[in-house]
Amino acid sequence: MACAAASRRHSSTRRRASALRLDVRACNLRHGTRLSRAMPDESQPSRGGRWKILLQFGVSALAVWLIARRVDLRESAHLVAGARSGYVVAAIALYVVGQVLSAYRWRLIGVSVGLVDSFAHYLRYYFIGMFFMFFGPSTLGGDLVRSLYLAEAAGGRGRAFNSVLFDRLNGLVVLVAIGAAAFLLFRGRYADLPRPLFYVTVAFGAGIFLAWWLAPVLVRLVLPPTHRIRRFVENDLGPFWRDRGMLVGASAVSLVFHFVQIGTQFIVARALGLDVPFTYICIFHPLVSALAAIPITLSGIGLREGGYLLFLQKIGVPQASAVAYAALWFLVIVVSSLLGGVVFVASGARLPRLRRA
Image (spheres, rainbow, N blue to C red):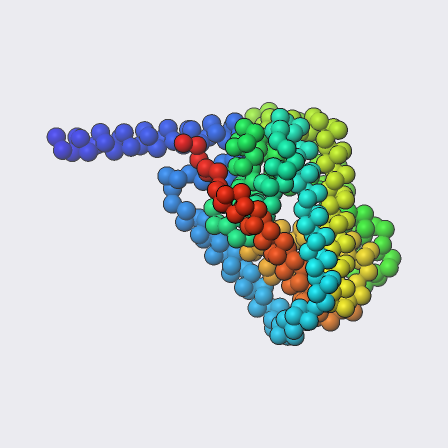
C-alpha cells in the first residue's frame, strides 16, 4: 500500500512538471524567446547562471592577465588618476545626454506597439536599468528591469520585453553600419589597419544593415513557416517592422546617439592628453563596442581594453595610455550609471515583480 501511494505521488509530481514545461513553451510562443530567457524557471536551480558568471569572470581575468603581461597597469592607473577633471566631467555629461537620446529612441519603439507612457517615465525606467546593468543582482539585468517597469505601467509584458530587444538590435545595427561606413571613407588615412579587417568590417556592416531592414522578407524566403525564428520575427517583432516611420525615426536617433558617444570618447582622449582623431574613433569605437558586447566577459572587461590597445597602438599611442583610455571610458560609463541609482532611490527603491502574483 505504501509503495502504491508513493508511486501515485511520483506520477502526480511528473504530471505537474510536464504541465509546467508545457506552460513555459506556451509562454515562449506568446512572448518570444526573450521573455523565456529573462524570466528563469523558479522550479530549477540557478546553477547554470552561476556557472555563466564564473565563466565570464574567468575570461575577463584571463584577458586582463594577458594585458598585464604586456602593459604596466600601474602606469595606466597613474594616467587615469592624472586625467584633467574638466574633460572628465564634460565626458560624463555628454554620455548622459546620449542615454537620454537612447531612452527617447526606446519610447519611439514602445509607443509604436501601444506601450504608451510619458517620456519622463521611459527616461526613469531607462536610467534605473542602467544602474542595474552594473550594480544589480545577476538575475535582474538592466534590460529586464526597465522592461518590467514598462510592462507594469503600460501593460503587455511580451511587448515590453520585445521593445527592449528591438531597441538593442536597432542600436547595434546602426553602430555596425557607422563602423563600416567610416572604414570605407577613412581607411586611406590609416594605412596600418589590416586589409582583411577592412573587408570583413565593410561586408559585415553592409550585410547586417540590409538584413535588418529586410528581416521579415528574408525569414519568409529562407525559413519554413513553423521555424521558431521565423515565428518570432513575424509574430513578436513583426509589428515593429511594419511601422516604417518609427523605423526611420529610431534609426535617426541611433545615428545621433552613436555620434554623441564618439564625441564622448574624443573628450576622454583629450582628458588624457592623447591626440586621437575623431575619424579614427568613428572606425574603432563601433568595432570595440561590438566586441565588448559579446557576453563572454563581465561587462566587456578585458575585451574592451584589448580592443583599444590593438587599435590605438596602430596610431602610435603608448600601451599604458591605450589601457588608460579604455579604463577612463569604462569609468565614465559606471559613474553615469550611478545616476540611475539616485533615480531608483528617489522613486521609492521599489522593483516591479519579476513574476505575476
